[in-house]
Length: 278
Image: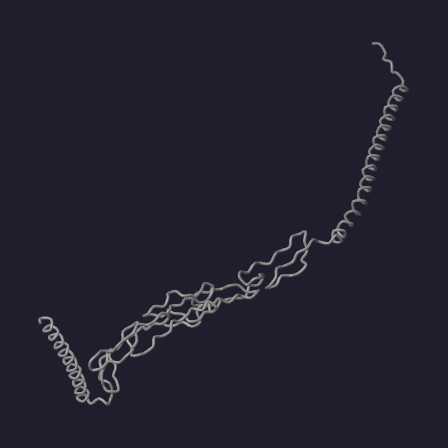
């Protein structure tokens, strides 16, 4: 008996709740209509910020992030929402019936998934190293990227590429070259024992080679001739000087002998002088 009374009370409460809910919705619709008329608004919605209006002029609650509308509200029930399935998302209150598909980060476009997709947010893509973004959204999300440009031979990197900018190149200064377009190097200076086979240019270095033997021959022949000529001449001059010195010594010796001989002869031939006694 008591159970029947409780069931009766619950049924009565449920009926009263439905009636109250219906009355509340009617009052809210009536208030909205009065408000629209009072401000002389042209025909349009008078629903709240997170509500949407049906053709029947009834206002229904929007579905929250991560869900979409499955069934509109009625005077007796609220809007029925369903969550987004895997691979889809909804990032705002909405009146839609389908979730947005998650974006994919294409490695072929130089992107990778920095943040995976959830029911309330889309995939966040970022740039792979060695690439820069060409389609940036709100200064934080990239939709497309491209590989950094390579500088051509004869140029060097002025500013390396970043995730937001491409590489900046500039020509090599005069007297330098670059084979791979990264850095410029000065041309090689050939040594004294080398000759320049090919001059340097912006894309290649100076080419040096060994000096030809003929060149050394042109230099060596006159030197050898001078040596062959000067050595005998020098020898002859030395011998002549020695011989002259020897002859001079012999002449001086003969002169000395003649002088001594003459003096001796003069002494012998001179008469003796006697002195008288006192």
